[in-house]
Image (cartoon, rainbow, N blue to C red; front, side):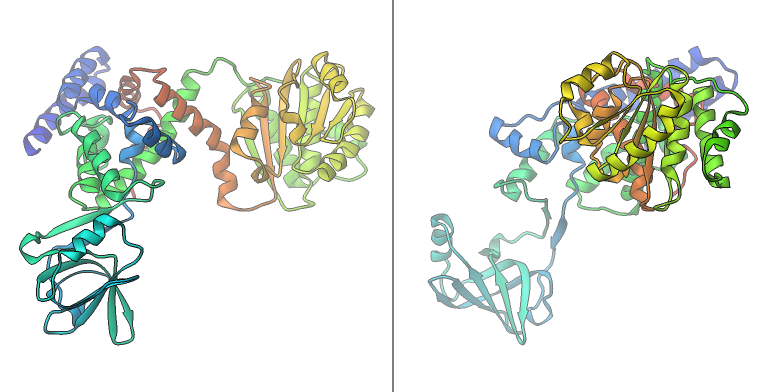
Length: 492
């Protein structure tokens, strides 16, 4: 491993030298050499390959959203049980390894074996035994020297171990037992075996999918070291945790970058007069607050310059989020685009509809309402498709696949935390270039994160479907040219 790092350090020096000279062709030559050392392509193909499992076992893993090798190997163990040394019963706590002599046995439910090590006694109990375990316990005689491994349960001065692993003292070998989360009716030994089998298919270490320039700059362990620490050595420490956190953030940033790279539709661009807001404010029965004006100007500038495709508008109940959305909607409508507003409940949708109808129909735009109790829905679908309804307000009924917009330009989602990611994705797909405004009165960190969830799902589909087979090279070139999506300078 040390020799590998020396070779990679030398290659990194050459790469940075040519990047400094803006000789990217020569830099790519050394990138290929770096690739041959760390096997980036092989690592990527292996990580994105399907699991080699029986159909019934594959279904169990799929229910836990584990579809490829990458998902499987990122499954962290629940705990590591250390059975590396014998502990006297009097000092035994949590998970321990006890050695002693069998002093008594009692068949039944529970099946009980009492062990004495000279410092105390331990009751080992098994409930609802199968035939295989009954056969094993029957062969353990009184007076035998045995070792029991398991969790200690204390009842006052008495100590018990429920369903321990029991074996003859001569068979004991110090070891660490890795315990994984439950997967249906699969045993822990089966899960361990599956992980071991897939690790055997990995490229010869060291391997990674990140460029060495990023690994070295952030003092990260190789991916091969991460998987070995998690599943082989059971040595999860701060360095491994740092790598996992970095990967999560890096892949999120990569997902956003890939979305930009493969974006086929530019965000909408609207035109409006300089005194647009002043004219609207004169028609209102109240004066807009400074924060409302600031929010409106920010959103309108986004759409005018086609800067971004979404914003989160957060404010307390009654702070005027709806009027901000409607003023922006009016600017969009004047540019011959349609507007859609989705509320979580029928009462909120009807309330928004009443305000919007009064505000927008005075400007000559038709407003429609679509909720679960709406009659003649097909007529509304047709009117929206024919551009006869300019602004449509509704609830989950808007998610109907029959609803098609003629030219959706502005999508508003109210109380966004009450909708699922897939629901927002369905609605946003009805307008490929639509600007999305997400509104919330819930000041929680999750509100900020939810904006990126659809983009993260895009990343998942890009990687798992392998639509970009050589996404590793994409990371290389972007990181060499120091694009902002790569969190190279972040420290934990």
